[in-house]
Structures are given as structure tokens and as C-alpha cells.
Length: 140
Image (tube, rainbow, N blue to C red; front, side, top):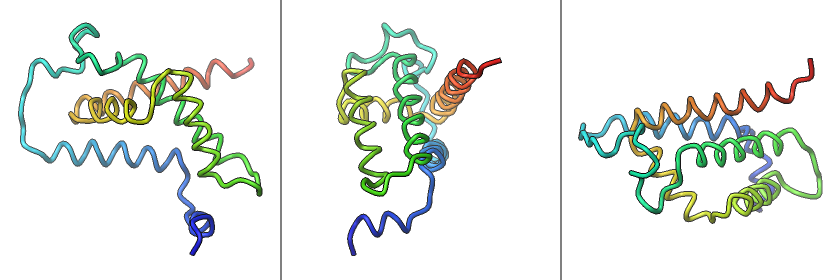
């Protein structure tokens, strides 16, 4: 079976899928043992982050861009190109815009999603960022 025909049978919408991944990671990681690290606080300053980790504000913008791209892919129809291929193009452009690559993205993603409280707060910030973008587009 071709990947394209298999993909057409999958009807999960991208934003919903990404949100489900975030929530499941947050729930799954909360089931682990409780280790408290004061240096791993979500509220630490950017100067105390490891060198390879983007500041929270920058990573929130990247995640918001990715979720916006997923929404755009779901809403567009192009019989010549699959949604997956179109999303990959969007993601490539987002990585290029923010001067990162997929490995660097995943390293940051894993860092921010590692702790349940940190990931929950992070998702609230992303949601708030997306709402602010939506509100700024409204014409009143």
C-alpha cells in the first residue's frame, strides 16, 4: 500500500494530533518518579539554560509557527500534493526562519517537555501566544 493512499485514510487533524502528543507526553512524564531539581525550574532565567537550549520565548514562537502551519495545511486542498509533503515544506521554512534544524528542534522540544509542570505551563504559553496572534488578525 502506498504511503499516500494510507495517509488519505488517516483523518486526524494536525493541530489536534500535535495537542494530543503534547498532552500525552505531559501525562506520561508525570507518571515517572518524583525527582526535584531546583536548577531545572521552568522559571529560571535564560542565562541558566544549557547552552544548546533556546530561551523559552523563542521556542514558544517556533511551536506556535508549527501549529499555525499545521492548521494551514489542514485547511488547504491541493490534489497534486499530499498534506504531509506540504507540512514538511512549511516545517522546513520554519526551521530556516528560526535558524535551527530538526535535531536542534527535538533537543529543545525534549527539554521543555521533560518535566510535567514545565510542559503544562509551556503549552499554556503557546496557547496564549496563538490566541494573541489570532486576536491581532481580527479586524474590528
